[in-house]
Length: 169
Image 1 (cartoon, helix red, strand yellow):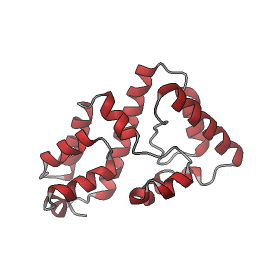
Image 2 (cartoon, rainbow, N blue to C red; image 1 turned 60 degrees about the horizontal axis):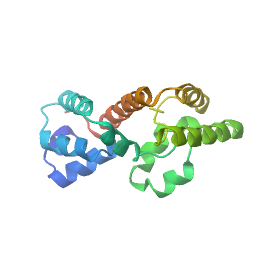
Image 3 (cartoon, rainbow, N blue to C red; image 1 turned 60 degrees about the vertical axis):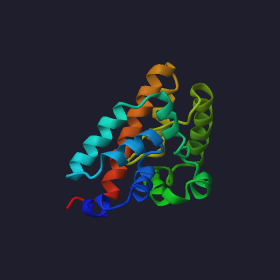
Image 4 (cartoon, one colour; image 1 turned 45 degrees about the horizontal axis):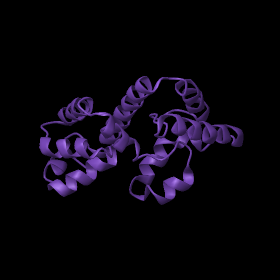
């Protein structure tokens, strides 16, 4: 959709678009309040700036809007509205061996047990093996460091999704 079309959406419609980018309700509410945007760059800048003002509870709410890396069944069920986008983002998992998928599943479980939320990574362009290496590294982090990294990954995901959903004029 063109930016001019987006700017004409009512608040509920704009909220639905932003919810596809990030599940943090406070971020979505602030983005809706910030419209209209004079340019796509201004929208991206606002998204990044507002994300930096979020707190841990906002991060956790956003993280809850993601399926586990490689969880194809959950993609089909819970995330119907954004399935195409999520499938594209996680396309590197489609070619993974059964061994890599089993390890990813185990590390996902261990990560969630340790941190209380799923492993968040901007999966676009990454293979399953690369994501497995990332989770193996990140699981050793302290919780305060890891939530900061996960939040930065969420910011990358939001930027990519906004870029895909909104066209410049």
